[in-house]
Length: 305
Image 1 (cartoon, rainbow, N blue to C red):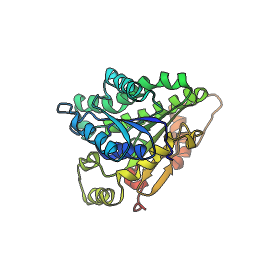
Image 2 (cartoon, rainbow, N blue to C red; image 1 turned 135 degrees about the vertical axis):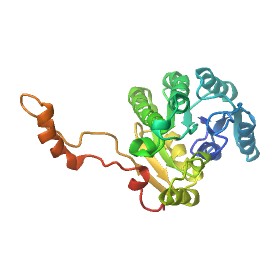
Image 3 (cartoon, one colour; image 1 turned 180 degrees about the vertical axis):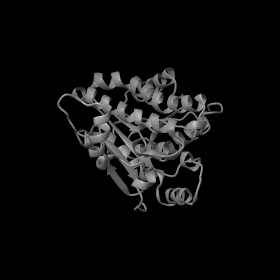
Image 4 (cartoon, rainbow, N blue to C red; image 1 turned 60 degrees about the vertical axis):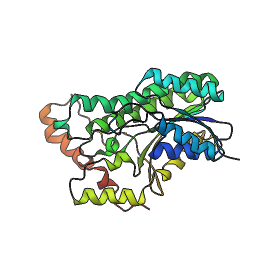
């Protein structure tokens, strides 16, 4: 007996990396899986190809599971709708969506083109919207459904050269939270994971210095995609039916529950503030509680377990 026996799960970006690991683990836990992957290049270019998704679906079937391949793009509302329709037509239902599909186009913000900005926002943020929107009414009608989005510490904390990616990933965190709030009465759950894992997306990050090289080397050796998949699969399982609206991080054998923005210090002044009194009083009082200009590696500074 598996945790997902009788369930139908759609996994996007499932031909490689985290998506593939999620699809394979969901199938081992008894789910019937729609294996979605556009089959394009890391930057979103090249023609779509069905081959990568077909290969993973076939691997699942060879291992005794049930799967079907889909090569639509998450960046298309029509494509996302087709994924859900395929799940319904092939397996008679849909219970969960795991959505790690993504691309990278890293560059410093002052050098970032409009095309590089738009492409990353389109796949990550708009793609998350399209897939969730295609599934949400079905989930609400059946009063059961779970979404797992993928955010990133690039947005939650910060990383150089990833303004487009960080903006999209922070947007996904907000999207997941609202879906969780709005879906609570209908038993529709939504959570987000910030993964640390060696994938072709991480492999493409430019290495600028020795610290960056060491960080990437740690990810390659100690943070695997298959170590992220258990959390994603657990979050869509019936055993986690009371967990929604949360942000997690997964790194190697470590799982983190991430904080969400809440007030940390308040100042009030009868009669109101002026720019001068803010500079002289409020801002100095708040400065000890302000967040430093850290990057993800500064916060997760120890070696992964």
